[in-house]
Image 1: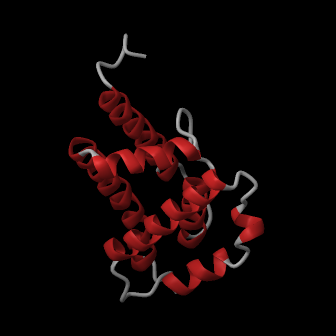
Image 2: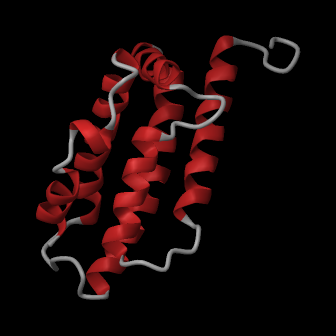
Length: 148
């Protein structure tokens, strides 16, 4: 690994960037459904499909390391801002289309959604049998209450 990365911090920054790029590509995929369906799909994907090379366990470790290390924190927050901006764009499109309430603050809602995502990623790391669909069947209702 250290042939390609000079330090653990550099490796973590590269991993965060790769995860960001993978998620942004998914956010930009064409979607024929509603903005609600698109947003739910993205949130579920963030929770369930933490992508290669990241696992649920590794993502929890990256968050913990970012909390301890100011340089990594800066990189994590920058990536988080980019990710939240992308999700906020979907929310804003849903508002403009009249699908979501007009009083929603997309930026504030992304903080709530990412807290939910991060918490459920941690739950999946702790309990590999955890399934959003099985263990939180009210997820679509929760999302609907936040948006509509």
